[in-house]
Image 1 (cartoon, one colour):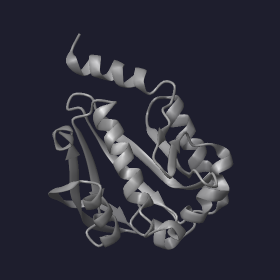
Image 2: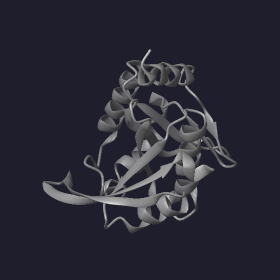
Image 3: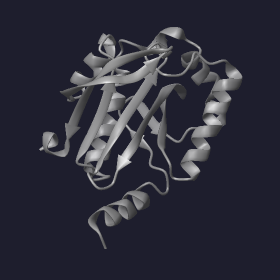
Length: 193
């Protein structure tokens, strides 16, 4: 069996049942329709969606987003975790691994959290937890993060979580009809050693 096929099988096995990842303050778990009200606080906020190619969303669009995520999870097409604060079970946002490359053992991470929790270390804690899980448990070699160069807060989060600048991607994203360059950061399994 080709190494990438073997890795894909092992990845699928490790994702079933869907993993719950815990930190001292947070629980990363499967996304449920009941999370819609909490997620709406973020998806409807123009400051949260400013550097996303989607949104702001209303409640119906947020529910549709959750249903799309659930369908993709069932089909094995994505990984997405709700970021739940343990103390009150409030869902602060989402984090995912996508563009999983079984040949190169890499994936791209993306995340967003509601504005009320910015500046409290939740994003760094979330990103570090998923990165560590992907590199140590899922046996990925590299986790990539793409960030708009004007998103200074997210760039700080990436650096605090141990990600390093890798390269600039010209014209990588279309935001509200404008094409923008993005910065690619990454962390590798060897960075954990």
